[in-house]
Length: 342
Image (cartoon, rainbow, N blue to C red):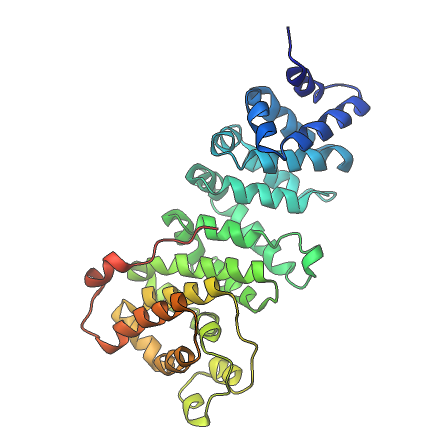
């Protein structure tokens, strides 16, 4: 005999719209608690496909269905099942339907699913040579086009977290660093956003991509015009730099440092940008590029005004490479940062 919960899950497929609406609202509410999640997970084989089908319904039904999937996807075992049943492809299709009204929730679902390597592979479309990278290109385009919206209306702000997740993998970093696609260049330009979630996503993505510096330094430095301001301005302090210092910098850095600026208060962003610099200047060509823009002077002045111990250690790690140029990547490998989690 079916339990009440089993009957509830079956009602998600009811032909009666009012019954279906009531059932999905109850299920969504249950996923908001750990106890509810555990109870519902026993019926995942029926529950997950039913909720997936409801994503194409009206907002009254699709919204609680997508919220339930976001909550359920926080459980790694359930997330694996969602990935295996092709939910990433479904989410991407729904995301770009003209009348989609659950955009933010679908993006949040993708954030959770890309916490897993299989989810990253699915979003990257690694097994489909012709389609490889198409999903990411669409998400990056949406991320960049929606940047002018207010925080309340910014439906794609969580794409920054997806980019951090995919850049934890080698396949993801290679895709983002392909010069022909120009994805990292587009992403970096979002660092100017006032939205902290976007800023944090961009910083984490740059940092993770910097792990490819040994093999792809040339591709990373191709976008120096955007890269160095994104990495150095957060750790340059807020004081106005002297004309003597500015003359030794490229215009994109010098112009920004010749005026008063608002300090970047987020500690994680400051640490991530310093760690990205560290990974880049582990390579000799990276150090030369850094010296050529007067980077060491910027870090020297930024360090003088830094008060957070964690950030100060990150400055010092970079400084150790600049002071002792004989130190190589092998000597520093045990202290290398690990890839950023979203």
